[in-house]
Image (tube, rainbow, N blue to C red; front, side, top):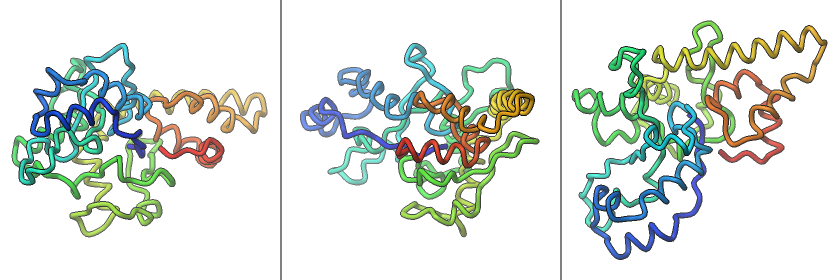
Length: 256
């Protein structure tokens, strides 16, 4: 998971909400500028899933969906329509539900796994404070560590200590990140295997660099990986490149 910086609310969404302040999501999907809004959401995210960071290119719209971080069905405040709240919308993948090569339940991830926990009453539908909101986390430093042996993510305690202005229902910020990984199932076998592909790519580049005595390979690989916004599994790549990635991103004034 990486920080998401959203653009300003599109005028077409503002206009629709002013005309239809009580419209629910299905009405918006059927009669509103849904396609345009979805495109803007994924453009903002560099066409990555907001949770697992798998690539979701425009030409595969059936692998993209819009997730509402706060339940869009919440009507407790008649003056606030959560379904049409621009800052409540993020773009996500299908969470492994279209993957036939992995056991579905064990390899659901992202909001698909979160919804599974909600439907089995293991998680509240209103899960603010139980899961990190990628719109509210910090862009630097990275909140996660990457284990090259297992290809799993874990919290970085020092980075977690710098989190502020986040809802937290746990005893510590480290636990919030741990539970986010668990609830979104970000260490399922499917995603671990995908990260291992990135690690192998990195290892091949490292082997070539050592053979050629190229001490600049991390800087060169950072430019190669991050010049397009953004590569799949951004966080994994960022951690592998370490300081070279941080310097390159800082030069580009990275904000998420």
